[in-house]
Length: 264
Image (cartoon, rainbow, N blue to C red; front, side, top):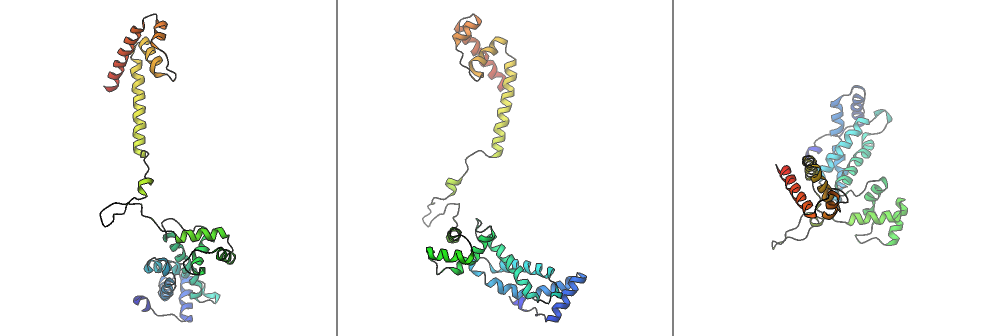
């Protein structure tokens, strides 16, 4: 603040001269003089936003961005002082910064919500919950719906909750939202690894089956590998004209060969 106050204010003639140099010759030194001479205006506006709990230095920096935008767009031939023109740009940047950073979850995203955000506090009588009559009055004055007023009040009165557990003085860890917000589904890398493993096993199984003789392959497919694998030992025994015990032996021997090939 001491540094800001060290910069002198400009007279109307000086301001017009610097602005003309910037507009006609893109004189950056003139732009700098216009900016630094209005830094105290930014600081003054920032003090009006201190109730939102954000660092004043951050508000001033955002306001300085708005001031620079105003200087870039300022036309000295319109007969308006820069201070009047710059206020809009400074406030616009501060408002945007507050809406963006005041809460982790965005409080206001539409134009109507932002209007509510910046007016509801000053229009409330105290810190108590709004009565229906107050809701109706504010809605009429701001030209919004009563339910939008109630929704914004709820957002403004809400508190952020840490996802992590809080450890009290006794060393006990309290319950925290992270306990039930945790996603237990596989991570993308794990899912891809599982998918690749299954694909590889499927390829290896196909190769192992092709190494079997036709009868052994038919037994395994009928017993285990088709979608409706309901064939019994007796069904296959009738199909091949052998005993059920012989089909069991063929199945067991084929299984052993498949396992050996897939683990090799």
